[in-house]
Amino acid sequence: MAQATLEAPDITCDHCIQSIQKAVSKLPGARFVSGDPDTRRVVVEYDPSAGGLEAIEQAMAAEGYPVKK
Image 1 (spheres, rainbow, N blue to C red):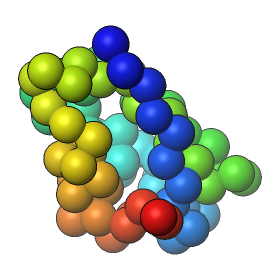
Image 2 (image 1 turned 135 degrees about the horizontal axis):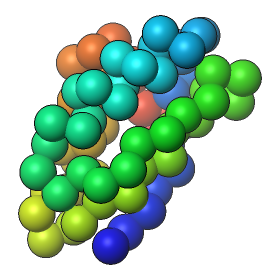
Image 3 (image 1 turned 90 degrees about the vertical axis):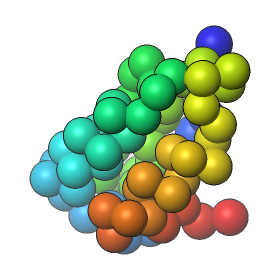
């Protein structure tokens, strides 16, 4: 299991976090998704052998919350 903390500057509220959680949780290997609109960060636990971090970032961007690199 791997964990990543991703910064997404466009997160502004709990609804944003819920949208991200819904999109990311559909991905294979995603185990846990949590976020904080105050820090604009999302913590994701995932199985790298089932899906990579790039897929998580793409799912977030598709919801309108691109990850800051």
